[in-house]
Every structure is written in C-alpha cells, then in structure tokens.
Length: 257
Image 1 (spheres, helix red, strand yellow):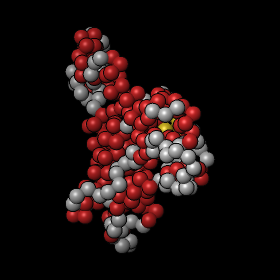
Image 2 (cartoon, one colour):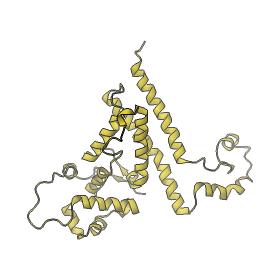
Image 3 (spheres, one colour):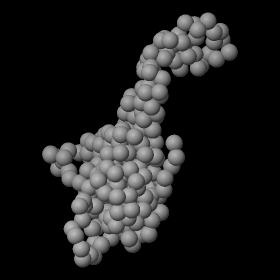
Image 4 (cartoon, helix red, strand yellow):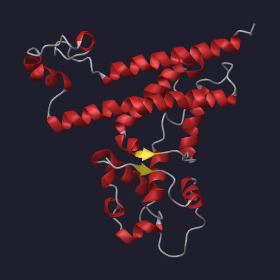
C-alpha cells in the first residue's frame, strides 16, 4: 500500500482552491462541472477502489470531461489530495446535539468514535501522510469542534491542542488494525474467528511448556476466539488515554503544595 504525502502541491494555489478564491471566471462557455463535482468524484473512486485508483484520467471520466480538461480545475493530483482531505474532514463541521451538556470525557469519546468510523469509511486517508495541516474551511471547522470538547476545563491553548492531537494520533494508529482485519477477511474469505477455528486442531498438538506465559495469556491454544478484536482493543486504549487526561485536568484544579 503506497503512501502519499499531503501538501506536495503549490501551497498558495492549494489554499486558493480550498477556499474557492481562484479569481474571476475566464471568458468563454460556462464549465460543465464544478470543482466540488471533481473532488466528490475523486472521493467516490477512493472509497470504492482505494487511493491508487484515483488518477486525473479516472476522475475526468467520472465527471464526464476530457482528461486534459481536469487541469482547468486542479493543477494536479497533489492539490487534489488536499481538496479530498478537506472535503471529508473529521470529526465533522458542527457539534452534535446536546454537546454543551456533556462532560469533557464524553465529548472526547464522541470525537474518538467519529474519527474511528471516519477512517473505516475512508480507509484511503490512512495512506496519506499529513505532517502539515490541510488548512481548508472544513478542516478548520472540524478542528474547532474537536477543540470545543476540552474548552473551558482548565487546560491552556497548547494543552488543548496536544490533548486533541493525542486522541487523534491514538485513533489513527489503532484503526489501522481494524482496517487490516477487513482487508484480510476480504482477501482470505475468513473472519478471524473462522481462521482460529480452522487451525485450532493443529494448535492443540503443540507442546506449550516452553511458552507458559504466552499460552496462558494469548490465543495460541485456539480456545479463545475473538481475543484479537480491534474494536475491543480500541476501547481499552481510549479509556486509558482518557484516564491520563483526567489526571492532567485534575492537576489543574488542585493547587500545588
């Protein structure tokens, strides 16, 4: 699975496209499709077939324009990737109903779950390295919602940003296992439980005496199907991270000494 890099295009051209500030339209016939149509078509291809399938030719064909006409909308694939990322930015551009009545922990859980579902819906995003932020309107709106989860709980601005970054980075790492599990199931035709069931008879013939801890804790005997559950592991890790954030917030409430 090849990794792409966000932000490789001309930064000012990309920002103008993200904010739809590309200047007045040129003279001539009105374009048959909009920039939004082009970006939506690219996202649909990536969702169905993966990021490798997103080419300028495929996107042009999807919206019904000539391949060379693509470049009248977007300079190239580098800029297109940033437009795609901004269009699907998670956790969304508005606070869920009842947001203000929830505590910070419940709000962060909603943010984490939204990110988890987002990556599973758009697994191609996991193939894009995003060291520099995509500073588009939807990305900033999503960031605003995420920050509001911990606004007013005693953290300073840098800590608020780092708390969200911690949760987002955790989800980004944890969801890869869930995405791989889906890929493996699709490739092999077997769920994890079916795979363990298939190999269980052979595992029962192995002498585990050299591995007393591994045989006690892990699923090597084939008896504990489902222990390699990405969703369960995600919940466990998220709870531990939120416990740590709770300690940070509590330290702000308790004066030293």
